[in-house]
Every structure is written in structure tokens, then in C-alpha cells.
Length: 159
Image 1 (cartoon, rainbow, N blue to C red):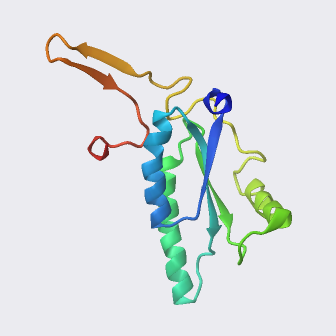
Image 2 (cartoon, rainbow, N blue to C red; image 1 turned 180 degrees about the vertical axis):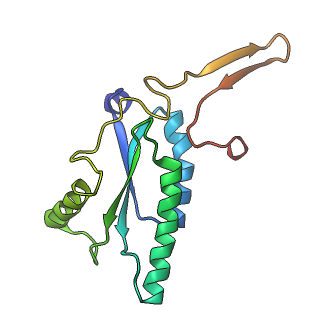
């Protein structure tokens, strides 16, 4: 519990790019924000090559590219240090340390990707430097307390 609540702790989410992952990460984001967890990277794994002459592979790659664009728009934020990184598909499921080393090397050598992923000192969710929760006392007038809790990625109608 202490590790999760430490101001230096950040999360890195790993997902295979597709509509289901985009939806799942969209639903996850407000919950992470509510609990004060900062995300410093979203890592898209099993990214297929683009430009295949095979229509089936081209369609699947196109679906992934659409998902990658959505993930980039929703998560990548230079102000908070949150970034989207892509890892190539190995042509099989990763197994063992050798495959993990290949993926780590691919991540470390992406254009513009630092050797190590940065740990964001602040984030788009409650934490150091983020907007504080506020409570407005309207008990005398309306009998309610109004809480304002900044939740990154949350839409009022979805809560």
C-alpha cells in the first residue's frame, strides 16, 4: 500500500491496440485518477507492420492504427510526461527472457524514445501538482455537500 501511495510511483499500462483496449483503458482512467495513480506510459504491444498487400493483415493493421491514434489522443501528454510507446509484433507470443529482451530493446531504440521511460514527477491525475479535491458546503441552502474531484479522462455523463 505504501508503494502505491508514494508520490514517486507511476503506472505503465500495456495493451494490444484495438477497439476493446481503447474502451477498457478509457474506462480505467477515471478509476486510476480517483485513487491518485499516475500513468507515465501506455505501451501498445503486438503492433503489426503497416502497408501489407494481404487484405486481411492490412485491415487488422488499419484497425490497430486507428486504435493507436485514439490512444495517443487520449493518453499522450507532454505536459504530464505521459507517453504512448509501440512495440512490434514478434510473430508469436513472447516467451521467456530472450523475447522480453528483444521487446525491451525495441522500446529503448524507438525514435524519440528515451533509453529509460521517464517517471513523471506529476501527472494528469491527483498527486503532486494536480488540482486538489474541493468540497463546497451547501447544507444550509440545499442540504448537500458538493464535491469536485478532478478525474482525468472522465466525462460527467459517464459517471
